[in-house]
Image (cartoon, rainbow, N blue to C red; front, side):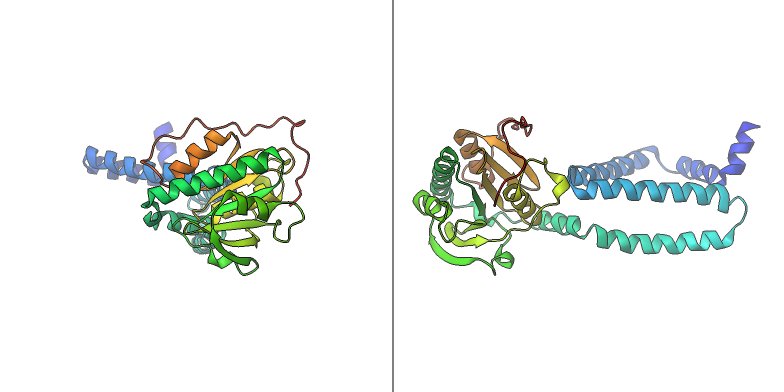
Length: 295
């Protein structure tokens, strides 16, 4: 009786089970592994971003509508609802493409990375030394800084508001650019092809809900640019002097100069890739950081 009732409510289940038995078991297993791997990659890519929350909401809505249509509309032959459900799925597909456009763009950029910029290890080592020296100097004096190191994806699209520099990277130059009350100390600096290309550049801001409330515009700018490109962004907090790195939509905070150098060497390809040191906790005690950070 229960079997008959289940099959009457879910007529497609019997067809599904019969179809599964018709396939070779190892083919089904391989397909399930591939599908699971794709789902895992999507969830991992979206983890901690605005897209993860959107994906959960869209999944709940689509699954709920599917169950309602199968239980009610098909059972009682409500053809108009079935028709509207099909039209809704087409609209939902287009809407998801628009809503997830930033995440899709990031995924395509990751797939298209060629890593051509990582061959000149000697120059990269020198660049890393200058960046670490500048970040250490500014951190000790609690001078805010925001430095983006360009990799494979060009950052020319955000440089319209900046000031062209085109100078060799040096700690002295970076310290001068970010020193308080200097004409170019606000906003960010872009390092491209081993040179300070632009200063006073406005970076795209990440969503406010993606960071702890005590973090200000510098950290939001660093995270936002790392979500839009493959750049490595160094942040020095003006309030606490903490050094952070934003890369691939992730923010690693409270780094020591040694940890900063290790991460930059790995991320910029200045040596053979090695495991990065254990992630630094992003938890900050309320007494250590003020509620907001000035640009």
